[in-house]
Length: 121
Image (cartoon, rainbow, N blue to C red; front, side, top):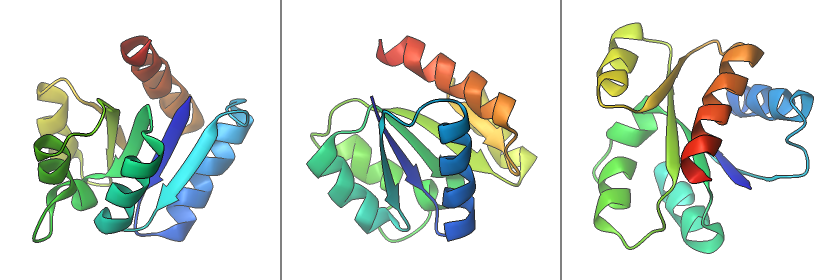
């Protein structure tokens, strides 16, 4: 299983990576990107099963990651959206996308990954 962490803050990515190790996802490939351009490059090269991304990087910019993923020929990745703003996550949840409020607790990350694994099979 390949998991990609997309966040412009290194401490957030490090925190998520540490939790993944605590949840025994250390055998999985864990990719990291700090911007949407780097995320697209890694998605193209590695075809991750799950993408854990900050909502800001998913939605903002000249060519948002969400738009580039939707318009490109990338494999279907399950997306887990993170944000420190509950109102942002509410919109994603209504669309059926798994979302996590920052700061992310280990149990919440574990539940989100289990739901994502169920989708990716």
